[in-house]
Every structure is written in C-alpha cells, then in structure tokens.
Length: 237
Length: 142
Image 1 (cartoon, rainbow over the protein chains, first blue to last red):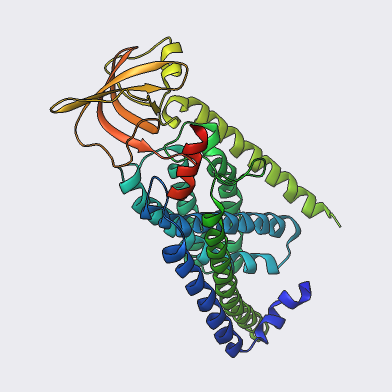
Image 2 (cartoon, helix red, strand yellow):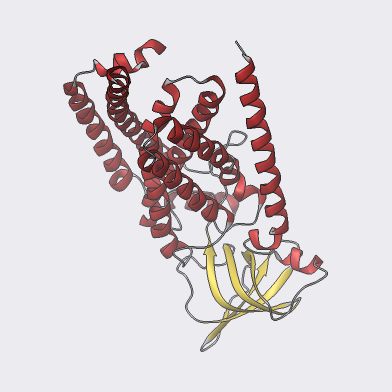
C-alpha cells in the first residue's frame, strides 16, 4: 500500500479521477455547511455567532495537523534521507497554510462580537500567528530557492523548529491565562459541546479533511511530474 | 539500518532541537508576566511588587448581583471565587458581558481592591449548548 504513494504510481492517476474526487468533496462540504450554518442550533450565549466555530475549529485542527505531518516528515527525511518525504510534506503545506489563515481570519470575525476585539496578543492567538509565519517561511523556501536539495534542507530545518511551536499552541490555553477559551474536546473528560453541535462539527471536519486530501493528491501529482523532469534533466546533461 | 551518516544527522537534530527548546523556555520564562494575558484577583492579591498605575489586565468572573449602572459608568466585582476586586468603567460594553460570566478588564490598579478599566472584554468559556438545553440545566440547578 505504501508503494501506491510512490511518485510513479501517482503519475498514473488519471486527471478524471480528480474530477470525481472534487465532485465528491463538494457534496460533502455542501452537506456539512447546510448542517453547520442552517440546521445546527443557536448557542445559549452567542446565538448565531457560534456558527463560525464550525469553520474555525476544523481549520485550526487541520492547520496544526498538517504542520505536524510536515515536521515529522522533515525529521525522517533529514535523518534517513527518504526521498519521497519532502515531496509529501511540500504537497500538504499549501492546504495547511490556507487553514491557518482561515483559522485566524474566522477567529478574528468571531472575536469581535464575542470578546469585543478583533485581536488580542494572548498566548493562543500569538502562537497561531507564529505558525502562520512558519508556514510562509516553509512555502517561501520551496518557492524561491531553485536548487531542490538546498530548498529541501532549509525547509526541513524550518519545519522541525516550527514543530516546537505546536505543543505551545495546543497547551497555551492551559499553561497561561488567555482570552481564548480552553479546549472543549479533550482526551480526559467529556466534551463541553452539546451533541447537537458536535455532529455538525465532525461533519465539517470530515469535509475539510477530504478537501485537504484532494488538494494534497493534486499537488503530489505535480511534484511527481517535477521529479520526473528533474531526473530527465540530470540524465540528459 | 542506522548508518554512520544517519547517526550524525540524528545527533545534529537532537542538538538543534535541545538548543531551540532551551531558548524557547528561557524566552517564555523571562516574558512570564507578558505572556499571561490577565491576572486573577488572587494573583494580584498575592503579588508583592504590584505596580499601581501601570497598565495591566484583570480577569475573572463577574460576581452575581454586583453590576451597578450609573449615568455614564458602571461598577462591578470581578471574582475568582477566592478573592474579589471592584472594577470601575466608563464606555461601551461587549454584548456577552454578563453576570457569572468571564470578563477581562484592561486598565490600571488603583489599589489591591479597586481597578479602573479603560477597556472591557467578555471572555467566553468552553461550553456550547442550545438555549433549550441551557433552560433544562437551569431548572435542574434550581
């Protein structure tokens, strides 16, 4: 099964498959959005403002997970020189970046009516902004450094150092007093979100996860093509 | 599986990560006061070097039945269920500002019992539920 992810196998995926996946993805997202934006109940304090949570929370989780994956892949690529890993990391990075951006923007839109401010320099928000900067640094390295191996080395270091920020983001609300609320879904206690809101949240998360997977596959196919071109260049020289 | 080169790369990574973690830890520790977004009434009560007339933030719950509106201003009590501070504020209040709910007040301490705020933020807790469920909870509480 791991062999299925090798660049040569990915190249064999016909572009029509992507068309089908995108239709599937759009269906899930539309269903999820109908659930989240219309069917799900009001909140007893926030009213309709709670609906931003259905976009903000999955985006935040995905932004962190993608960077975690990139960090892990970069460590293994650096130590064991597995050639496929930098390509995987590079392919998921744009989706993660967009999710981090969505997280901050939707968070800000939610904060104004709820807290009374668009932004606050508390630990959670600041560390998320730092994550966004690390994403920008990671993507810029790949974009602007033309030598693949150099870009690979520098971006790996950026990813690994940036991964240290991830536990800070996750536990910032527990370690310090923050404006941002503490986690409602934890491993150790029952969720403090009512089940009528939890279900749309999971559906939205699933939809956004499928979205990441589709974008990842499309980018990965591009990376596989680029790899082939690089190999051709080396042998033609 | 672990060749010599792989081993040296692992050592380099461990060194890099340890160094970064140390730097982060030192930076965060020295910024301690600034990383914290607000102090609770108990933290202010226990602080030795409390700086009066320096801008700071106070956070906690609005004490029940403590909100008093006057023509241009409002006073209320912020509590963390152990200690309390009276807050005086002139200006607009966020929508979610309510008794028994979280609040963050930005301003200056007049003394350890009295805080003059120039900005009030409502703090949302981690509970999300529909209004019907909340009514049922209120009924069972009473």
